[in-house]
Image (cartoon, rainbow over all chains, first blue to last red):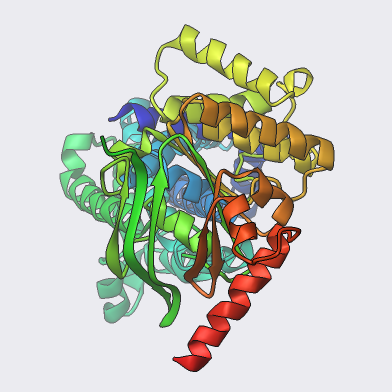
Length: 244
Length: 249
C-alpha cells in the first residue's frame, strides 16, 4: 500500500474523529438497531438465526452509505478535483477510503457483536477474530460498492435512493430474515448472485455452527472476488469533479 | 536555453459537443505571472484544468515543464481551484498538513515547520486549530492558497484566486504572488477582473475559447492607439476587432 493511501486513510479518520456527532451516531445507531432486533424478536431460536445475519447486513449498509456520501461530498466540495491534480492515484484514494472506514466498520462490528452476545444472549460458538476478518471482507465490498455507486449520484438525496435499490433487496433475498429455501426457485437463483447471501451464509457458519474460516472457503472466495471486482470498478469510475 | 514553462499547441476541447477551447496556442515563460482574462464562459477554467491534467485535449498538445501533465509533473505544480476545496471538519493546519503529505513532504519535522510557515504566511496563525467550516469565505480562500503552495511548487495554477476577497486581502495576495515570481515560480492566474489583470506580467484576453490578444498590460493598452486607455478599453477593443474579423471572414 502506498504512502498516499495511508495519507488518505489518516485524513478520513481525522475527519470522522473531529465530527463528534458522527462519532456518537456511529456508536449509537448500531446499538439502537440491535436493540430493536432483540426486542422485536421474542423467539430465541429465531433471534439466533437473524442476529448474525444482521451483523453482516449492518456492515454492508453502513459501509455503503457512509462511503457513498463521503466520496460524493469529496466531489461536490471540489477536493476530489484538487486531489486528482496532485500526484495521488485513483487507487490510492479508494484504498485510503477502504482503510479509513474499515476501522470504523470494525468498531461497529465489535459493538454489535458484544451487545448481541452479552445483552441479547444470542448463541455463539465461533472465534471472534475469525468473525472480524470475515466482516472486514464484507466491509471492503461495501466501501467499494459505495464508492462505485456514488459515481451515479449528484447529491446526497440521490445516493440515499440507492439504499432501496442496492441494500434492501439483498436483505429480503439473501436469507437475512428467513431461509432462502422458502422462496420461489428463481429468487433463490437470483440470491446466489448477491454478495450478502455469501456474507450471511459465512457469518452464520462462523457464529452458530462453530466453523472456521477454512470451512467457509466458498463464501470467502466469492466475497473476495466481489471485493476485488468492485475495487477495480470503483477506482476506474472515480471522477475528478462534479462537473467533469 | 528553452525558458518556456507551459506550451499549449493548437488545443481544442469540447463539453458535450460544444467547443469550449478552440485551436488555442500559448507559450508561458518561466518565472512570470501570466493572466488569463475573459468573461464567464471564455474557457479560462477549462484551460487551467487542461494544463493541470484534469482534462485531456480533444486535439493538440500541452506541455508543462517540458512534459505532458502527469502525476510526476504534478509534484512540481500547485493548483488552487475556484471553490475553496477544503475538508471542512479539519482545522486550518490539518488541511495544509494533508496536502503537504500528498505532495511528498515526508519528513515530519520539516513538514511541521513548513505547515507553520504557511499558516503564518496566510495570516491565520491564531486560527490554525480552528475547523475550516467555522471560517469566513476570505479565510477559506487563504487556506486554499496555503494548500496549493505548501510544497513550494515551481508552477502554480490559480483559478480566480481573489474572488470574494476584500481589497486589503487582495493586495496581500498580490504581494505574495509577486514574491513567488521573484523567487522563480511561474504563475497562471485566471480572472475576470481588470484589477487583477493589471498585476500580471503578461496577459491573454480570452473569448469563446479563443485567445483574442496576448501581451504585457502596457502592450495591450498601447495597441488601442489611445495612450490613456485602460485594460478594460483594451479588452473591448480586441473583442470588437475579433468580431469585425469574423464578419469579414
